[in-house]
Image (cartoon, rainbow, N blue to C red):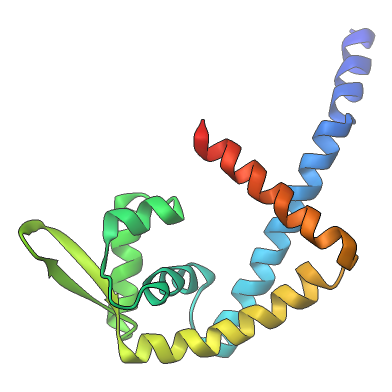
Length: 157
């Protein structure tokens, strides 16, 4: 039994476990900081901000709830509840999809775009302070390139 304990301790203390743990802790803490700042300054959640990013990125294009759910890795029920809340406070509106009665598209309202612009400034301040500033400028490009490669590998699987 002692050998199993030693082996378990060795594996739990491995470089892979440690390094991945650092990534998860950093991402979780950064997301919490962003969410707290957005709620305090703009009265929206980080997830609502992510929806507004997608809607404001292509202002002439309505996006389906299904696509938003896929982009944000939410269930269809989760995206429905989120859009309900956002619609309730005037950030977005649902519109019927032309030619498809079963599909619903989502678009940003004028109020949603105003809130998004304020939230984008808050988001940028938090990201600059807690994601960009702690990394040496020479390392920042490598970091973001590596994160992109990881995301691409996960998407391709």
